[in-house]
Image (cartoon, rainbow, N blue to C red; front, side):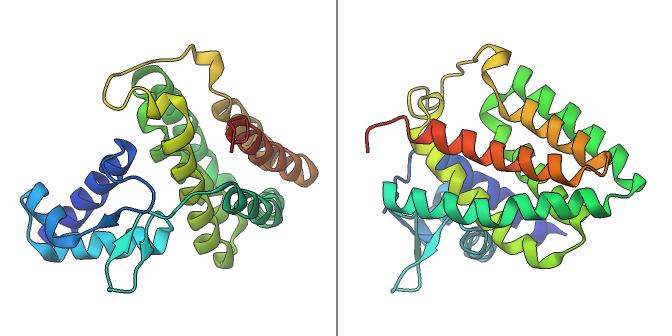
Length: 222
């Protein structure tokens, strides 16, 4: 139990370091240095780094270490083309196979996201991951899980480094008006469509959700 807890603590701490720009795109993330900073043994840090590579937030390097991926407009375009090819289909299947047993979890996640918007918008990536993973679970198709997790984490990297909300504030809390957050509204519409078994609407909302993130990220000069 202790090892699992230490690994999770290391996992979350490394994500926070990336959000805080301590490790910019292309930077090596060194196991021994992380362990020293976190005052942990290397074993849970090594496990956390493997998870982050698997999730798509880090990449393996030739020296068997890992690094923050380089980010570019070409990579962004390819990433979102791929997201458009798999996530709307996953949402469609979720609407097709939705079961009433998921209703309580959906409501809890919607409430959790609203709480993050009001209290800690800097941590919205936490509930965003849960929501996209839940769509996969409802779709009852495990082949979506790994690619959906990877593309969402890679998308989060672009937000961490190119959304002014993260890049300008770093550690200083800066709240936006609630209406500026589009994802909660889109997630609500998505889950409402899924619960209605409206396959066409679920697919469209997911497509529009991905497109709005892409448009937001491509406003900057690449």
